[in-house]
Length: 201
Image (cartoon, helix red, strand yellow):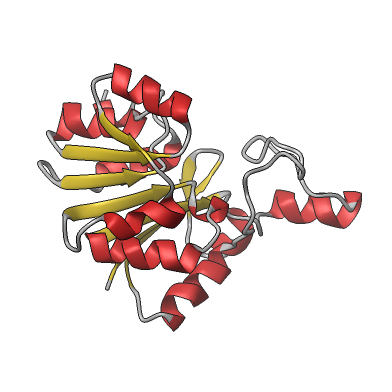
């Protein structure tokens, strides 16, 4: 089995891991406990660093021997020098930041390229929940009630496409996932639960 397809790695992280070349310098922003970093170091021999807000996740990552600092993407990315990394990664974190446009600008300044993944809030299950139930959805991938969720910007695939186009950002690759498996880019705004974009200036 390809180690990058290990069942313990989240579907969007598998896409990212499979598209990062060996020995790349990587900054994983919102790295959690470091699953992606560990995979990249073990199987791609990458120089992987992480930034994570949650103190318990940082402690777990450090316990795994990973290079992770506690910090906030909204404020601490400004301290990183430009062009320090080959790839800056923001997985399932964009929608939780206070100023997504500023965070993305920093990602593309710090890294030569940036991977961004996020849940698609226009997925058909979300639409059905709102249409028939009239309530913010609770799904397998969005498991928290509206008052508990860290998601404060409900971005869709089409929102993000328009956002990067308006800012003159080049999309080098895009992957769309449904039930953890790749799905077509056709009607991705309706069909995809998750999106992964590879960006550059």
